[in-house]
Length: 457
Ligand code: FAD
Image 1 (cartoon, rainbow, N blue to C red):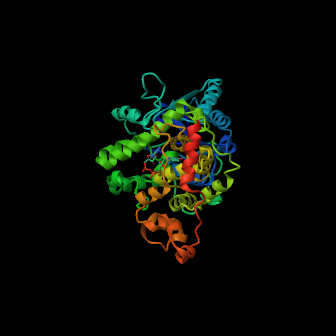
Image 2: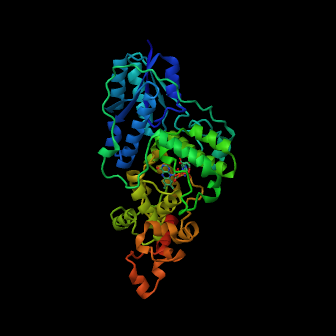
C-alpha cells in the first residue's frame, strides 16, 4: 500500500487543493497533517488573532476531511522533525505540500527535501496553491521578477490560471497515526473583540455572498471607508481557506467592472508574493535603499504609542487604528493612510508599523504586509516614493460625512458631518466639550521634516 503525507500550511481547505489531489491520485491512503512549527512562535509571528483564526480553520478542515472519511493529524514542534516522524510512522513514500514565497517557507522546503531524500522519500512542492499564478510564472526579460506592478499586471492578466479542482469525494487515510488535540479559539486570550470567524465553510459562505451582492459595486465603492464595501476575504486568502485560483475564475465569470477591479487586487497579492519569492529579505530590509535616516525609535516613542493607540489627534488615522485593534482587520484605505502617517508624517521606520500590524492583523502576511508597508514608506515598489497622504484630505475624501470616524472615535460622535475631520477648528465650549487629543504633530512640520530628510538623501 502506497501512503502519502499531505502537509497543510497556508492552504487549509479541501476545495481546489493540488497537493491533496496529487496525493490521492498517487496513493491508496493519505495522512493529512498540520504542524504548528515552533520556529513560527520563536520568530514572534504567532499573534493571538491569527492563532484563533487558525484554530477555527484547523477544526473546520478536520470536519471537511471527516465528511470524506478522513481526519486531520495535528502535531507541534519542529516542522521537519514532525513530518519525518509521521512519514516513518505511516511508512509513507511521498510528501505533498504547497510552495511558499517567504524566506521561512524556502528554508522549510529545503530542510524537508534534504531530510526526506536522505531517507529515500520524495517531497513534491505544488505551486498555484497559495497564489493564482506561481511567482516566476511571468518575468521581465532582464530580471527574475517584476519590480513595478503595472507591467506585471499586463503580463499577469494575459495568463489563464490552471483549472479549479473540485473537493475530493473520499479521503482514505492511513489509520493509527497519533495526533495532538486540535487547538481551540476559546483557549486563547488577548483577542480582538470583533475578530472574524475562520474556516473553509465560513470562507465559502462569504465568497458566495460577495459574488452575489458585493463584487458588482466594488470598483465604485472599494475606497468608501464607512461603506465597508470590500470583500473581507483577506484572512481566508491568508490561511488558504479559499483558493486564489478559484477566486480569479469565479470573479471573471461574474464579469463587469467590479469583478475586473477585484481581480486586479488579487494580482497585487500575486505581485507582492513574486517580489518576496525573488527577494526573501524584503520582509526585513529595504527593497530599495533610502539613504536618509528615519527618526530614532527613542525620540519617536511617544508618537509611536499615540499612533498605536489611536490618539494622534487626526480622527481618520485614529479611527483606522482603533478598527485594527477592535477587529484585527483594517480597511485598505485605512492601512494606506495610517502607514503614510507613521512613515512620512511622523517619520518613523516602516518596520515599526509593520511589526505592530503583524501583532494584530488576522490577515497579517509577510508578502502583503511588509511589501505594502515598503510601498507606502517609499522603500518598496511604488513608482512615486515621495507621495505623502494628508490625513485631513483623505478623511474628507473617503469618509465625507464622517460616519467612519464617529463609528470608531466615540469622543467625536457629537460632531456633525465633515467637521469631525478637523476638531481643532471648533471654538471655545464646543472644543472643550469633547475629550479628544490635540494633534501630536502639525502636518506642515511633518511634511517639512520629510522633505528636509529626503532632500539630504
Ligand atoms: P479586497 O479589497 O476585497 O481585495 C481582495 C483581495 O485582494 C484581498 O483579500 C487581498 O488578498 C488582495 N489585496 C487587496 N489589496 C491588496 C494589496 N494592496 N496588496 C496585496 N493584496 C491585496 N493584505 C493582506 O492580506 N495582509 C496584510 O498583512 C496586509 N497588510 C497591509 C499593510 C499595509 C500598510 C497596506 C497599505 C496594505 C496591506 N494589505 C494587506 C493589503 C490590503 O489592505 C488588504 O489585503 C485588504 O485591505 C484586505 O481586505 P479585503 O479582503 O476586503 O480586500
